[in-house]
Image (cartoon, rainbow, N blue to C red; front, side):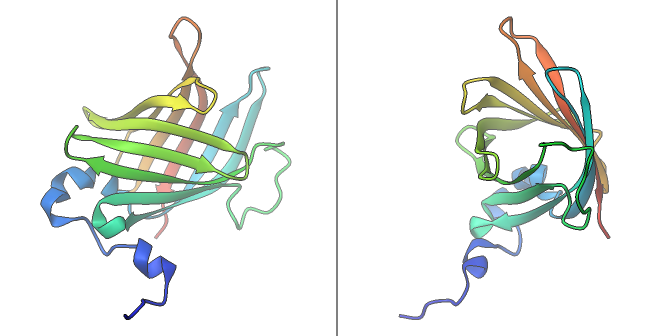
Length: 175
């Protein structure tokens, strides 16, 4: 039995699964490297800012998009503006033709923050709704999407079901 020599080779795919290429383009259009400017509003009203990076790629025979989000960016150096706000996590985004939506699984072992959501197109935007491991309802949105930029908003629901913006990333494709 011949074993391929690389975990990366087994995980990565060259592109989308042909049978669902049109649906897979929802997130597939982000394949590549990005940088982002980050803002986070803390519960006590402080604003934290920083610069991060994202890498999106095809995975699992082209049935999924996997990404890695990092804050601060690896070349940013230490930041005094971020305080304790850092992350280094991955999202696995798997298209499910049975529900015509995406299963979204975020994992950040650095901060031990995990979230499960369902993602769908909403007009020109992408909206992901779910909850984190504490049971808090979350809504993450990609808006203002172009070939080379997008705005990402991270919101959480209060006890009455009202959404509150916590995080905003303005991302630009890296050439």
